[in-house]
Length: 292
Image 1 (cartoon, one colour):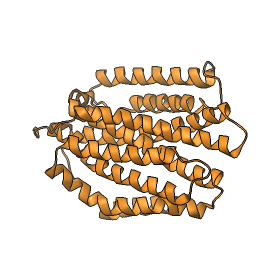
Image 2 (tube, helix red, strand yellow):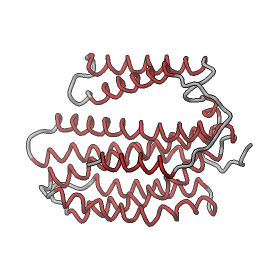
Image 3 (cartoon, rainbow, N blue to C red):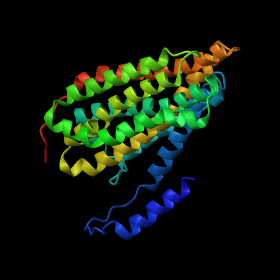
Image 4 (cartoon, rainbow, N blue to C red):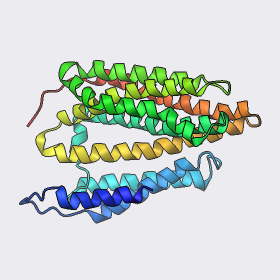
């Protein structure tokens, strides 16, 4: 079902995106791309196996170790090549680094939650997929309306106030979902999700603006590529981590439907934990002057 939309994007890009001429002739660092791709693949595989295998087995510890070694090799390669895929100079700008890490934590919980809510509604409350989709709808509509507005907040209010407010709202919505048991209503889950989306939409655009505004203009392209790539990596690892938490919690408490709900509640609590870390990091944020 996704494929037609991908094809449409490709076709629209060919016909409508402008062809911008440039005097640069960059060389692509293929060995580094292969190294980081396999490094992330092995690391993600190790994380994904946490719920299914013992921690001190090759399926978990082995894959994770190989992934970390390949990522370390990638970092060394990037520092030695003249045409790095990622220019690590951008991480010397503290506001970019803090904003990127906060964004990764937020995205991790956001994608984790999109797994948890349908599982709770369909597997525990035994509602239809249509009901679980409708539970996500109010938050999605709110995001659509609020996204243009949240970007304007960056021009009016201190970044720390915006992100702190958004994270606190997100924490409250996540807490509402975490305390829900098998006797809960879909309406309460929907309310928690809508509150979460309100917090998320207040954060995502301002935090990206904050990250890029701290970089010199010559690093903007590197910053945009790195920020968006790490966002996708956080989404993948967030999914793996939350599934691992659910599986481990289910192993501890198995049997009845009530016990099955414990795994999903543990997943929501894990999301809450990551949000608390993001909340602590928000106090490192401050508005930087734009640099050339």
